[in-house]
Length: 290
Image (tube, rainbow, N blue to C red):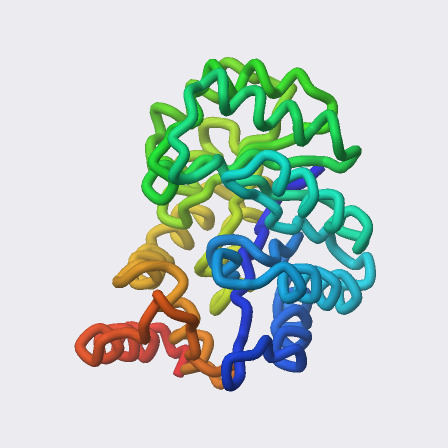
């Protein structure tokens, strides 16, 4: 259902508010360059600092601007199950095609708690749902055995696997088979994960190089492994640069260097330090982006 090159789109700000005009322009930039689906209000979209009204507004803008050309998978996760259900229901009402639900953070639930959390959301909202496992941010790891249990629910259709572990991704693929689509949550291992059976990537790098990220996925799917390998190695340096500091600070800075939005982030995130900004600028110049 959800596959290919999927962008976790940044949320542009202007003087503390969501820059709606720039957000619409960023959506167009993605679609024009071959992106297969768009994720608003994910980690890269600074969902943790959007209030409820802004969260709904960002989803609404993206859904409107996309206008059914590609799927919209709204970030709706929370560390409160009741809140996750409410936000996911809002996303459905706003016209999102799916929901991306990060594992509950800070609570550190058990595997049974994670299972019951996701089942509760899937039971409550009839919308295709993507599990999102990123233990480096949440403090909890959604284990392959739990993913396999969840994959039996009709509304749970995919997982964004962002442990950075090919072993864990492979175990998920082995246990779930055709019950679940696996998507890479890390640009730098998209190709290895696809070689194991993943169907694409939810990408940070695609914010600035959507055509190239899409081309990598398309080359692999076309059986052109030499071209997929070339693009994988070509994108490695810029993908690593997207994490020179905490995401989304580097990628939003990169988008601003392209002239597509301001580099404004919300506290507690802070702008890139000068030394890292200089490194990022130099890398973007190497790639001919600026």
